[in-house]
Length: 242
Image 1: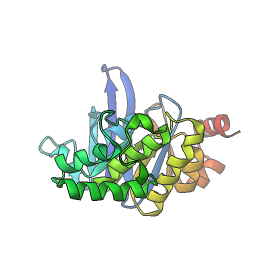
Image 2: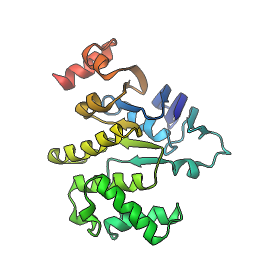
Image 3: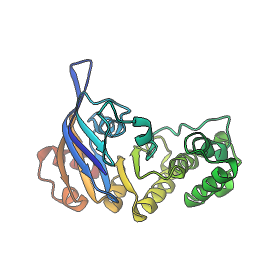
């Protein structure tokens, strides 16, 4: 579903945020990316739907080369849901209106169809009763679940998550991770940048450790957690797990 080859991102011609990254993600696979702050993991994720334009390399999503100028980026992005650290909900719209907006504008659904889809996805993330609420009336965890429902309503083939729990109070983290675990169990193709190691252990098919813009180690979560082969990986997990 996703293939990145030689992915490099340089800022101001001197700062290498990402260096020569190769990454493959199969359909139905959950790939979790971890690493220190500033390691380039979020930049890699943002390059996968061209929110950041790679300086070098190739990104192919569902058979479409995003780095080819002839590719209709918007049509590819319509198949890729993305959930950010911040919820990015429109404060003047209700939960239902936040979800149905893109369904009507991008997918061409009428109001009734859009509302039905939105309610299905709100039920999926466990908050159908919040449909008529405004974002300010919701907790952070509820707002993030609305953001996930909004992405799911578009019926994406791939979901990208950029540290979706980092802006939440600790007691709200679990409700968002539970939704993500259900998506993983349902077979959604997911790439997740996170610092939640419990989620990585429970949901990841593969764990990718990035440091200084480079992929240092890739493997099964239990192998990397319990027996990392690179010293940089060992040092990272020694700091956060013990």
